[in-house]
Length: 409
Image 1 (cartoon, one colour):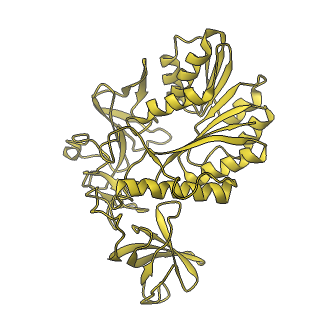
Image 2 (spheres, helix red, strand yellow):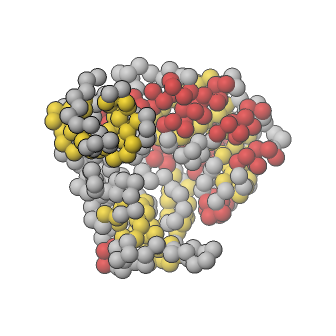
Image 3 (cartoon, helix red, strand yellow):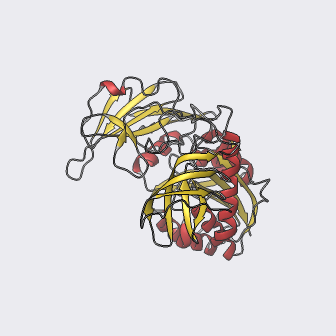
């Protein structure tokens, strides 16, 4: 990696000219200046760029690209019209060819797995994130949450900023999804939730501003609950609750879980961090009415949706509780456990409990590469082996990925 520093950085001027190296977790690429690591946003590997240093963390700096001097062949005109340096933080890889972005994401996951999980996933050529569905890089999102400005406008945050971009033309969104949102004057501090459901209906719900300990909600358009379908089953999920953002993700992940679970009639399965019970549904089909499925989530709204959707499957138990407490109370070993934890991962305590329960087969899903890799390392420390692993480009135009592994012992 070469570096051509034209000026001194934060101690003097904040501009440098750098040739950047490999991608890092979080959407940046790695460069060096006088032995110091510089994480450069809006750059691609191999590019020579002029950057503005945005923060000094002592041993490393963060910087944004101000000018591309020698571009990569993978650089394209921004696919998202509102993203980029000093603009909305929605699509932080909109300047990369989508196929190249999938290679970058795969390389990041492979690096994190090696460093934090002690696991060699694939070589550089094979470490590629897979596309989800056939919608391409744009128009894939079905749910979005906007914040509101003191002037009453809804918008997207600039990267790591309280400031909002009120141009709502994000490339992730299907045409018309946010039509008319600018016509409303929103109370400052409110969130605007918009969902287009599987009936094609749009729902707009305002949550907040907070009133003491309460966060009131108001339905502005449509209904409070959106209709979602996976296979033959129907869910009614609050617009303010979690549902996979990519329109094709719920079905793709469900099919993969059903395949990897290797369940038969009469078996037992756990669906942990189960949300509305999408995975519990396919697990219930596999074990039949002679089996047992437990789905656990802390969200009352998600659990209510799960109970309604799975009402006809009496062998499914829906528990509203923390996964840690639920696991501590279980006395029956399941044949498989499925985990879809938040971005921070499942962590040591939960994985210790799974290992202590001698769960022989685990399907683990992660939406943050480093957390996922750390969790894989924890499983491996308990003697689990990675039987299979796939990485999905579930959030095109961004650096985010979804990783799924099946671990056995």
